[in-house]
Image (cartoon, rainbow, N blue to C red; front, side):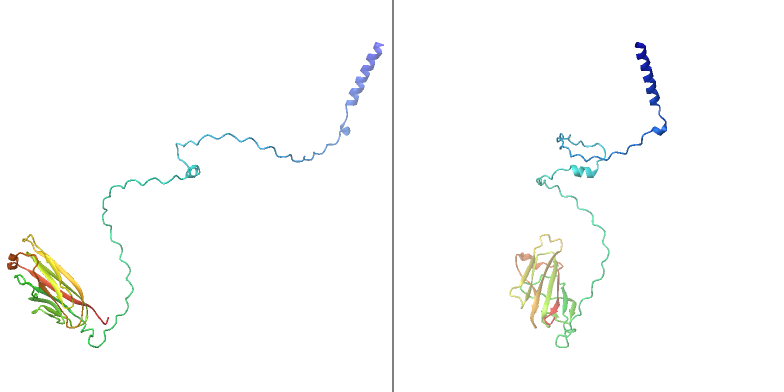
Length: 257
């Protein structure tokens, strides 16, 4: 009985081995690729991470754009500091290039051919007193030298300028002396005479006295220069050292301009 059972097992194994051997004709067909599945749902948000470490300044070159992004908010304005000492004055720079010529001015207006023609509207004078004596108080100063007198409105002998052409005039004087002196401009066009004084304490040097005025004159009004007493010492009136007085005036414009 047992022999029959063993023989049956051997026959079964032989059949199994014969059945497992198959040629190419018995190969199965390839399967097709599977289709993509439906996308899954988004996951839940993750937990917030921990705060990062503070930035550390690099020892090497720093990108300005990076610093700008790391820059904090602007603070409040500080208190103004103490003003520093004044600096030294710099040297004068070189002169600039000459500018372009300006536009021509408007044409002048003619004064006409009447009483005040262009030739008659001129008036200017400049005279000099070279007398070493002290000019007498409250008297008109006279002159020895005439530098300019066009067309002749000033009288050097009397010391008077007489207006011939009504208009606006400028008058000025200069004196040089080694003693104190007071001079004033007087005119019938002035309510008060204009006085100027110079007190020379160092009598070894000439001291200059100057004065001037702009006057609006009508025809035949006069202008003159005179000396007057203020705080001079009595001895100064007897001074005979060199003195010089220059009196000048000229027409600025007439009433027709």
